[in-house]
Image 1 (tube, rainbow, N blue to C red):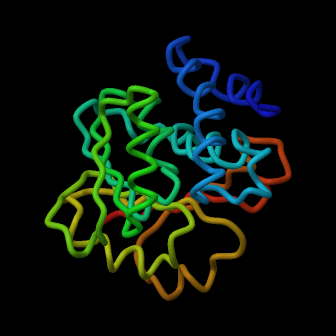
Image 2 (image 1 turned 90 degrees about the horizontal axis):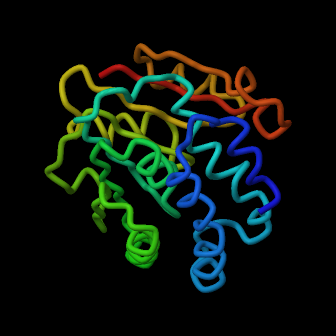
Length: 204
């Protein structure tokens, strides 16, 4: 819980109800994570800074402002970034998809305990699903070319693919060869963890 205050520092607009949901996530994830590795156990002490706040970084760009958007989290893994964003944007519809059944089952337990009603879950690969979204999210899933290849048929016209990335991505961008925008998260956060973290937007 050491970084919980930083959540309130960086997102002071959060309502008390949403703050309570985020606060409760820690103990729920800790219990489930002891059985299913949703988050690296070595990194769990950074639950808020490395996972919740990182997921919510997308909020800083002020892209998701339509209450009727359908947002797909591709390869959600432990529920990031989709689950924290579903709490924040509780009027939008979120679809969290992952090919690993035990992770989807774990997220189902978490969403029911926290009472997050705007999430649906799919245990499959996105390219095998006949779904369409306005925004597709990914975090530490694959390179940008793969993300685009898997996502392009599942996104509505004028949709966006939003990728949370780290490190040097110059080669990925060259191979992708698509119009994109890069946002450095060091602009928003002072912690060392965010020095090389970026958000890459791909317009479809």
